[in-house]
Image 1 (cartoon, rainbow, N blue to C red):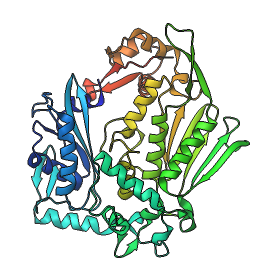
Image 2: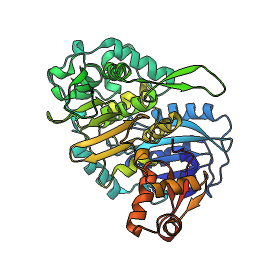
Image 3: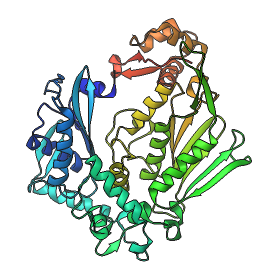
Length: 462
């Protein structure tokens, strides 16, 4: 069952709205409500009871909605519009992050999400939205950079961004010939001053003004940090160049694995890590990191058995690493920088990137990635096939017995696991066993309390 089907199965909520119509007037209220209420997803092609009815000519309608919502919602907002297929039917998926420039408005109307309902905001709601906005509009990326001048920017990167945004229909500019107008539309030129986001995204040498914007990369000879490194890079400049430089660093410091194609004697060399997974991990680190402190940063570390991408950012309050493994609303701490990644198509979707990253690793046949969240920041680890540290490598004999006994799609409850496979350990250890199998992407948990059960995924042990 793919992520969209899982969302549909759970039903409408404070983070999910079903619509059967692509009419703009029906779509605007829930999109604005999610922007004002912490984020969520609009699924078009699903009726109010959760029945998948689909959308005819979905690509055409998705393009129309992408452009129309940009025009009708103020201020400019970050969201993604895409098409997914479920059971042969096309659905339009609108991923909406929680907006920081509240209140978001269309035609003088402001909406909020309350439970599974969208409602019109009243005067008290509006006051609360304005109060919430006050401290957020001075976030680091929106602060003016007094010493940054137009001539300090990489103008070819600005042109490339405009062309990419127009080609993909992801953003509309009032004047594509004026650099000042372009930056103003992107929120990177305010009150006549260029912002820190303009420096990060387009500055030729942003580290001169903010040393912490660098991405430091190291490739180590052994699996221990601190040992002699084989290669290193100190990447800064326009953000697209930093991303390209980091991808090139991974390419030149990652070994190739040999694979023999079915019914063929030809050998195919494949990369240690899927290109999509590496790019998504780097984009997330660069978009969500904390840029405000000189002690903050981001790093890329490559070892013989794994790749680690760290950034100094924090997850939203109440979140832990488990939120990154399931469908979740996006709450970008740097929406202007995230918007740059989106309109350049470095970021495919808003809020589903981590799930697509897991899927890319699964499709490539490598271990499931892991996330570590602590007071220093967030670390993503991608394992290659030989890694002894991957979740797959730590599976016990009793866990292996369960996985080998279940077919894809079959389910088991905790009590059954204890009775059939884990009678010699405590129930708490049995729970840990099943949690580890979840982390290894071999089981998927559904339901809560007495209804909780584990479903075997399609991932293989090897």
